[in-house]
Image (cartoon, rainbow, N blue to C red; front, top):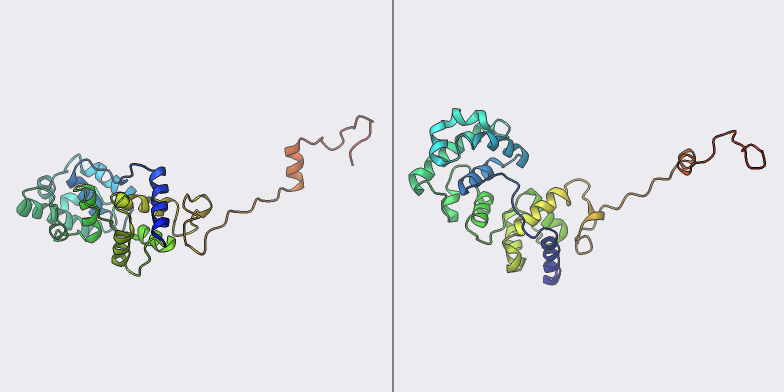
Length: 242
């Protein structure tokens, strides 16, 4: 894909959504870190259902650590792998208290050293909290980057490197959000919505979904819709329809 086409794709995505952001509910950097960590292998909807209950009770490292693993579990049962995530969350909170003065660290090495935090989560925090032009790659972005031709790659890291290298600087800060939302709602895994896609003509996907053909209306439906006379009605000349 040419640089001009990549830029055109991002321009359209930006025009459609000038201020993209995550769908995970949060109001502080720590809340965002918790929400992103919990979102692994589960939906944002499930995470939001959990954090709506958890954050009013505990939304700081000290409060999470005080709850302990068994105290956290009841609040995050809607989240997949909640037993493991509860243990990671409490350990993460304690490590932030002990090693970072209760503040979310702002460098990749420190973030990835936290329990339950991998490269994707660290990239999101660096991008959204610290303004770094990182592009996190999840399953949605991996699919979109490969389908469209934006950044083909066999692994998430290959796709990430391709996106970082090929995304114009002006779009790099918001690229993650545009691509994840596009993958979640338009370029879906099954039956992508190609006919209504705003970048359809720029996308290099060879198996685009076609618009469904209009269904042929049955004779009876056409008669009803057209307001035809009922059987037995008389014509102006007094003859019945046959």
